[in-house]
Length: 192
Image (cartoon, rainbow, N blue to C red; front, side):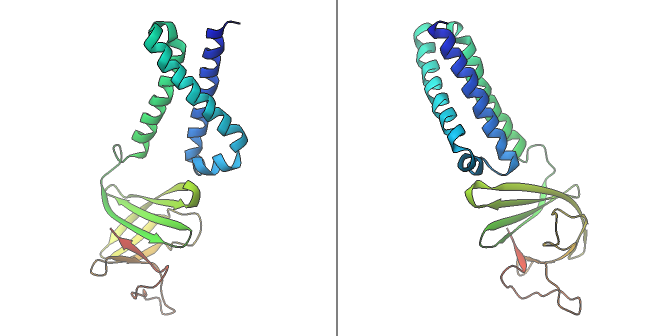
């Protein structure tokens, strides 16, 4: 096997490894997987960086045609980054009508209510943890009722109260069933 084939194989393996690592962003976050599988991921990152610069230098010296395998695979990473950013953007989603965030000591929960009746609960945590839950809602005056809750447990109830003066969405009710509209820790989302 000659030197060119070796560099092509390194470009292919490192690119596939980087793309696989990038997909972990959809399963909790890339940083978490880096800490969990660092002995595998760090060598792949180093191989990718070395291969990328080798491809860049070689393409300048010998041209793109001589390095088409490496250029194609390194281009795939750029395409993957581009497509990931488009997928995670609001470009193909309905316009947001209301956005509110609740911050606790480990996580930030951001509710995004969209014009078409869909909503998202974007959960962000330490070490780059991210998860998005999808649901559906309806506005009834100053009340939000979830027809499909954007969460897997009872942390966010199915009925919320919007207080636009206080710039808050309250989630707690007292024993009489009335919303507690006093801002306290973990009882409201701040409207942005």
